Image 1 (cartoon, helix red, strand yellow):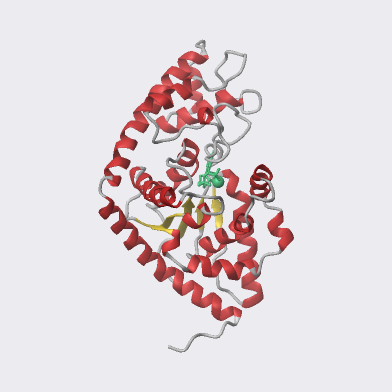
Image 2 (cartoon, rainbow, N blue to C red):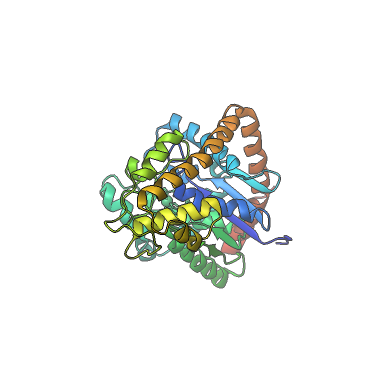
Length: 337
Ligand code: ATP
Ligand code: MG
């Protein structure tokens, strides 16, 4: 399949009313950067969201809120293809083929599934949650993606994608590009503000541990100020011994484009209070325009829906071509037109 630029693809779930700071620093910032150098496809993965119970009205609303936030963060529909996963039925279709290529034991080794299902209990865990990494494989392979910008927690799923692409290609003949994970080392894992041993997460963080980008700015400022640090007072980047402070330094450095070394110098001899107060201000300055840009898109749902419709149309042309190739390779009899 000929395309000039390398391809990038990623997806984000509309499982909460707001994205969090980990989503932005770990993933969305990279989406924005890659649209300059790649033929980039980004989607709101509503089919992944329903692996856990969702209120239908909320899911519909949150899907628009997710798209609006991606635009507010800097995605430009003229430079990338932005769409909603369920608008492109090929995802579910290739997902089935990939399910039939995945070993049960292989899928059982996915640590996210183990963590999430352990929390929910076996009776409340759906088969959809179990096979969601396989649907994600289909999401990526449909677009012949070279790079997949994600956070560190997705590394294992991208490895699975590579394994399945290679397995398909060697069993049936070449159909898929084997993708690589694009994970930025510094920001690939942003930690919970109250428990810096776990990642900030829509599903696992407590309200105080998570910066939701659409919260009132003063709420986010307060959460920064009450972030858990340690009993020492020295401001130094040391992930092992000072995970809380290191997390704050990463956030501060990334949002302001300063190096961690410069921040360490700036706060030499000062306490955690000074760092937190300044970072709270940086946070407020960042979320305030982000929230108003998101609201502008939400105030004009027709324009938003048109952007998503155009994106889905573009995505479908690529996805349909890959699906037809995969169906053919597997030996599914083509329907007569
Ligand atoms: P859930 O807890 O429901 O899985 P989530 O917070 O992980 O939600 P997703 O929509 O699953 O959010 O993830 C979207 C993107 O954000 C993915 O690329 C994921 O790797 C990235 N991401 C999520 N949390 C973090 C984090 N704490 N630090 C860096 N990247 C993250
Ligand atoms: Mg996740």
